[in-house]
Length: 199
DNA sequence: TACGGGATCTGT
DNA sequence: CAGATCCCGTAA
Image (cartoon, rainbow, N blue to C red; front, side):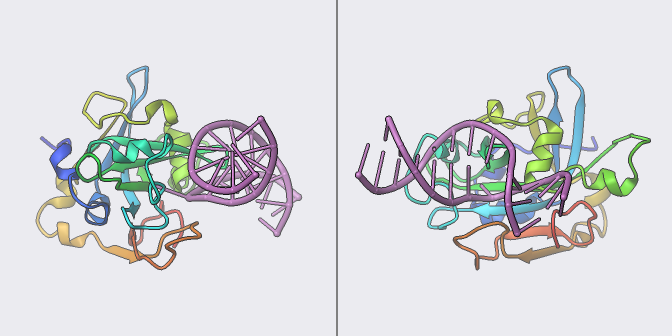
């Protein structure tokens, strides 16, 4: 068994704990026609209660309701009227907490018209990865379960064997694009990945 | 009911 | 660095 699906208990932790652990894991998208696209998560951000940048900072509203849902479900929202962003909900139900998936290193993309470098930019950013994976609000509040439209797999053996868990070099910095909570260092990315949205 | 801004990206 | 373009949160 090379990959293992991550299930709910793993996500029942604060977003600031889950977010760094998700880097190196694999987001799996199964399209309606059954085809599957995988991407290694290379960049995440955490959003938590008490965090002024969290969409649920003030109260529960129709938009942010998904953040209060069970761990291991999705929170998908529309931003700037154009792009979607996908989060993985963490913490026990009722606690608004989530990890924004900011960038993926897509696996198995074969397109002769694109350079390797260009392929690495296809999902380099939260809006771009949702566009590429065709993720919109119809996938809001979806459980991350194998065989569903979206799920997550643990770091593969080739990443986790031997010396390697330690070799995932994480960089921790401040989050991007915010006007509130700008000083909280709740963004993590895989050092050296060509698919990270910004250095 | 009206209004303004947003966890973004692209092309100029 | 402005524009795209929609939803929703807040105020009235």
